[in-house]
Length: 154
Image (cartoon, rainbow, N blue to C red):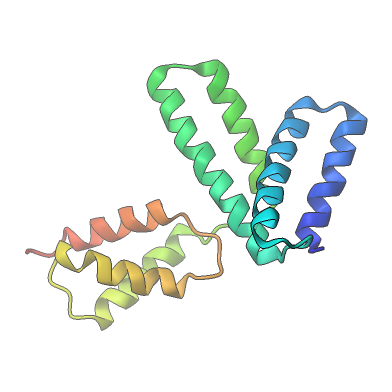
């Protein structure tokens, strides 16, 4: 069992003992996602990298839900999702800072012959390959790259 998986199991037990319902429900959802992935492979253990992918998907789901609830003025559900998001983020390594993403975008765009928005797919592939294995918000990368490419004329 990976260290991350063990930590989640331990925290789940602690939440049960402490009757921490918010943490408990979130950790149960994470464990459910983990069990689903394990059932697909037939394994009982999961590497930390695979666990991080599951957690990253969970973070993405929460962010999308937060956006929906903000648009719908559902403060009750919004607060719940934000709490879950913060709890899940505790298990992920720190995100790549925006300044580093901008530096990579600048470096890649300088080394490639780019002419505008039509190069978006090519550049996203190169940038995301450089960021592979690190916690990064793909939406943020896309927004920053779009901003950079809009400075060029098509």
